[in-house]
Amino acid sequence: MRTFEVYLNGKKLCLAGIGDDGVLSAIATWVIGKRKKGDMRLMVGGLISPTDEHVSWPDRKLRVGDEIRICIRETLSADTPKTRYRRDPDQELKAQKKYVRMMAKKLGWKIQTPASN
Image (cartoon, rainbow, N blue to C red; front, side, top):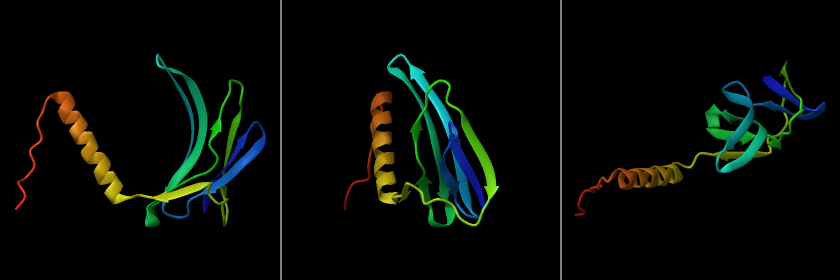
């Protein structure tokens, strides 16, 4: 399987892999704004498509001067993810409805639902 061997400042953080069907990411982010002091992070995660399971390995805060190294490997196994969870369709529908209600309110729209029998 294709894996990412991730290092931070010379120290190995993980060997991440998702098998033969999915998405694997290693992302360095910098977020700053008027209301946010600033946040720099390294995140390694992915999606195992056959089981629709989201996985992640260590999430680390970064500082100026940190060095990230990612070696792409072909291995038989990977480290166990730190977290894993499956999508919850009921929770997603609830969140979508909440979003639609919030946007309708913001736009001054009224939502009409079918009458109960």
